[in-house]
Length: 118
Image (cartoon, rainbow, N blue to C red; front, side, top):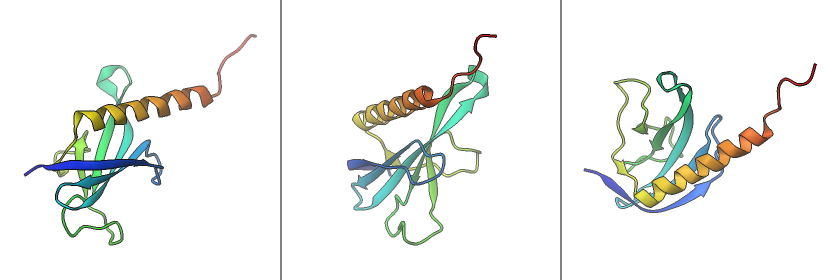
């Protein structure tokens, strides 16, 4: 069974390395958290491929009762990782990609330039 996202709200990422965080309100009545982390795909010439994780998607799971169960929407670290049952709408996927692009553009502008005249 897949869970649909009824509503969502982008929030400031709290976890180290998290680029985008979204509070999800699911059609099963559960509030979940989606976090996006960067991964470099070595087979794609260093292309950034995001890892997308959902926390607390099942009824009874809570942010206030660690350990938090992680389920992957994209790029799980290994074959034993559990896949998420949350289905993202095309609109939410587009907004996540826009947020990622904004974060990546901001980090490129903040990166110090290397090299210079000798």
